[in-house]
Image 1 (cartoon, rainbow over the protein chains, first blue to last red):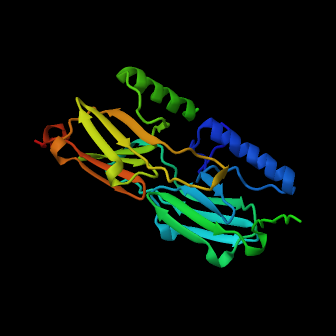
Image 2: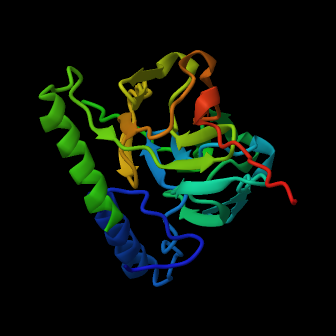
Image 3: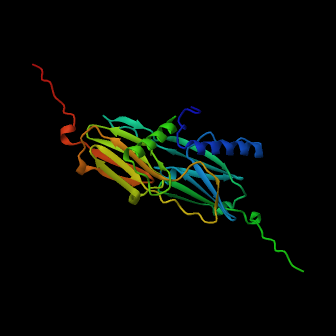
Length: 147
Length: 134
């Protein structure tokens, strides 16, 4: 096993884990910084368009109020805690596979964001964060004039 | 390790039933907690992306099968730039050893978590036998 402890969850198929490791390596090479990708919970996907980024994360069974999202420069910080319900008296576990405990992820955004326009929705156990790109960074189309 | 087990379970299920999915998408084995007490079994399954309508529960000959169907959002004009998880449906089967009262099974889904209460039938409940002192 490559990790043990509270945050070690076998959440991703190997291919996604490999992509994660690749991404980590790329981040390290490009920025010279180490971004904490060791924790695989919650898993994050990121989509990009010209105007914004959509970040989605599978965090089933959590109170939306227990999710903290903050932005520091270009790095989005996602943290929270999933509480174990514990056992009632006389109860015993046959299976205990669902991860619980505190989690924290940092994600580097591919651009400067408009902080005041970030929207987050939690639905069906999936957190979706929409992050608009700063106006001055949006790609501009340059028209070529014909003489 | 556990990933390999998951793969095996998926494959095993396919060969047993000899069926294939109509939908060309992955089927995952959801992670579960199963707690037993004197009165019931409580099964909790993580199925992010599934709501009440997408859940199908079947109990046949002591085999409990839970299924969840996910509608993945269409993201036009977006490209995936970072991926750590894949979207797909969920399916998992359990063989129940206790006698379950079929009529009293309760299921609920909230925030992508399925909660299944499987009350034991009266005769399966442990009976406390008191020993009298002479």
